Structures are given as C-alpha cells and as structure tokens.
Length: 268
Ligand SMILES: Cc1cc2nc3c(=O)[nH]c(=O)nc-3n(C[C@H](O)[C@H](O)[C@H](O)COP(=O)(O)OP(=O)(O)OC[C@H]3O[C@@H](n4cnc5c(N)ncnc54)[C@H](O)[C@@H]3O)c2cc1C
Ligand code: FES
Image (cartoon, rainbow, N blue to C red; front, side, top):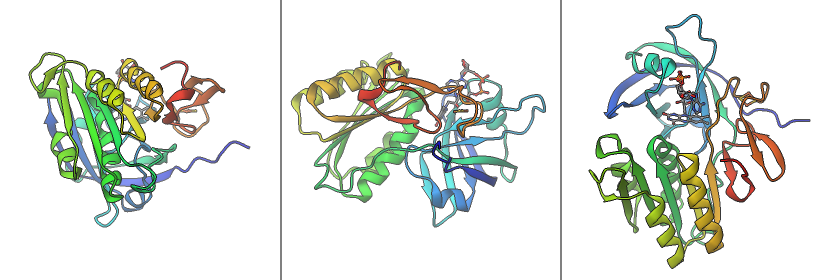
C-alpha cells in the first residue's frame, strides 16, 4: 500500500500579499488547520483563481506557519501564469489549497543530536530554509547559512535568518556582487564543510547548486538533505509527474519528498 498523503483540502483567505523583492511576493493566508499541521519543508498546492482553463494548482513551500495566529506565509517568485494570478490576489480574496504535502526536513531533536547545522539556500529555494531555521532556533541548534541570489534586488531571507541566529554567520553571495560576495553560495558552503564542525546540512535551490552542496557534505561525511523541485500536477501521489530518479528507483517528490536524503538522489 502506498503511504497515504498527509494532505487535505483547506479554504484560505488572503491576509496580505506584498512584493518583498524584485518579482518575489510574500503572501500571508489565513488557514488555521493548515498552519497547525505544516512542518518545515512541506508544501501546499494552491488553486489560484482567474483562469478557468487552468486546472493545475501551484505547489509552494512556506517560510512561516504560525499555529497560534492561524496564518501561513509563503514567498513566491512570479514566473508564469499561475504565479502572476497569485500575485494579483488581494486582501480578503479566498480560494482552496491542498496541504500539507509530502514530508519535510528531518529537524534534529536538539543540540545533543546536532551540535551545528549548515543551511544553503539559493534564489526562491530560500523560503523552506527560513522555515527550517526557525525550527532549529526553537530547538537551540546553532547554524550558519549560505544564501545566494542573482542580485541584491532578488535576495530574500537575510533579516529572518539573522533573527533566528543565536551564534553563527550568514554568508551572502550574489551573481553580480550587488550584495555580499560575488560568488555562488556553494563556495562558502564547501569551505565551511571542509573546516568541519557540522552534523547536518540542508539545501534548497537550483539542482546544480544542491548537488554541489551535497557533494561537499558527502566529502565531509555530514548528513545532507535537499528539497527538490519537480513539476507537480496532483501533489498527492496520483499522477507520476513529479518523479525523482534515486538510487532506489523512481520516487515521487510529492509523497517521498520534496525533501530527500541527498545521498539517494541520482538526477537533480
Ligand atoms: C514542492 C515545491 C515547492 C515549491 N516552493 C516554491 C516556493 O516556495 N516559492 C516559489 O516561488 N516557487 C516554489 N516552487 C515552484 C513553483 O511551484 C513554480 O514556480 C510554479 O508552479 C510556476 O507556476 P506558473 O503557473 O506561474 O508558471 P508556469 O507558466 O506553469 O511555468 C513557468 C515556468 O516555471 C516552470 N515550472 C512550473 N511549475 C514548476 C514546478 N512545480 N517546479 C519547477 N518549475 C516549474 C515551468 O517549467 C516554466 O519554466 C515549488 C515547487 C515545488 C514542486
Ligand atoms: S504530483 Fe502527482 S504524483 Fe506527485
């Protein structure tokens, strides 16, 4: 029997929807049962109104879930029709979503299990890294972070990670040098892993970036998880559009992921 999906249908209402970086929006929705159920690294599949011909929902991760307030904060980049319509949703607009989807990060239990973590996020892969950083800080696990973006105007997540850090550093890299170092965030990540001192690595971003982080973690002998992006038509294990080639065969990212043990991934 396949594992049943943890997802169920939720109504939601838009609380706010603002552009926080060039082409990147922060959407806060009210969805109390979802906010209480989500775990860092999980995703939801959102029905976006405005195009009767589009049957597909948009799969999105989240940066913050506040069970007390019943809200979830999603950061998304506008790349096509669905995310354009999502950016046009206004305060009070309503729709439905399916979630929580899949399984998220294996957050270490506490500082005894993980003395220090390294987080590496690139572009719009940063939101689930922010959700993880919050969970690590709640468990008193110190971490360093390497964040990458095309330019300063597209960079998100730095203030949030600073807030969750008790000790540690954020290494910011941009392709054009407009913020932090002109480098890829895989460069500081590889150097930090060479120096050692980490027990857990988490990465989300472009495939090529995650592979480099995973290779550096493997060389350093540190456990690494990666959150993979695939096209997702259904989001609950029925359609096979989201397959990831792993050492154990094809695995659907919506049910077996999106977070995978990096040593298992064959095609990023
Ligand atoms: C588990 C998961 C979590 C995600 N979390 C986030 C997030 O937190 N923030 C965010 O901005 N984006 C996230 N994405 C990517 C997001 O789902 C796509 O950008 C979105 O579906 C594009 O929809 P669209 O209708 O605007 O674009 P479309 O017109 O459908 O496509 C525009 C471009 O995006 C590509 N694309 C479409 N769907 C996907 C997809 N599912 N994965 C990869 N590329 C896609 C297309 O190939 C095309 O190049 C996530 C994807 C997955 C699978
Ligand atoms: S999205 Fe349909 S099986 Fe994964």
